Each structure stands twice: as structure tokens, then as C-alpha cells.
Image 1 (cartoon, helix red, strand yellow):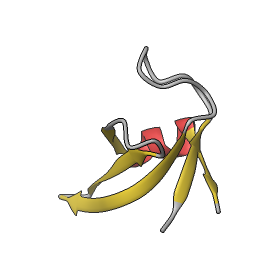
Image 2: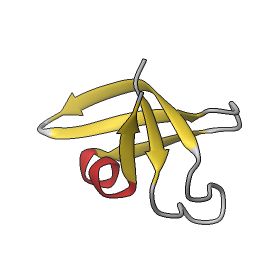
Image 3: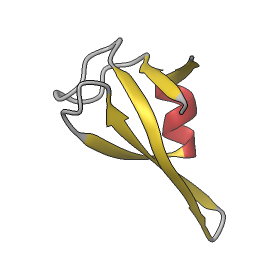
Length: 60
């Protein structure tokens, strides 16, 4: 399972350095979206491919 680390603060809910698991991804009419689950299972967020590349870094 892929893991991502937040590089920029995401509103008020998640701080820089929070780790997320990639739980699903989908593509609809050329727009890719991803669902990430916080490592502490606190919540899920849905983001676009653009947000994933700008706000997150892949870790293993």
C-alpha cells in the first residue's frame, strides 16, 4: 500500500508531516481523483492529481 506525507498544511484539519495511506484512485473523463486515509485513521480526504503532486510526497 502506498503512503504519502503531507508537505503543506491542509486547512486546519491536518498539519505538515501527517502520513496518509492511498486507499483508492479513480479516473472520470480524464480527471484523476485519489482518496487518502490518515495514518491514525482520523479521517479521509479526496484530492485531485494536481493536489497530490503539489501537497504530498510519496514515502514507503
